[in-house]
Image (tube, rainbow, N blue to C red; front, side, top):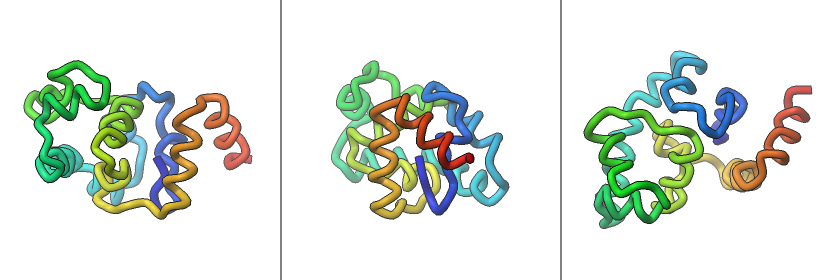
Length: 128
């Protein structure tokens, strides 16, 4: 996920990286912004007229997946949070940080999401 020059995919070790691990690797300002991501997810689900169950199923996850995140405090992984965001038609940057990413960043995110090979190549290029 890209937001304001920060590459959260670069911070995450893999798509399966827990969101808590991403939080532990970012700066204080972004960590503070991420503190309320569950509340933003819960509010977005309600605003879309979904239930936790319907949003979970729409994202291709188990019927209680989002309930576990929101009510039991379980952690999500990067790839599963992206699936939830896609199903709800909401920016991952908004859910995680409370701010939408620019359209260019979202386009790049989608390109990177669909191909792990492409993502690694883009990240290698950006790191060089």
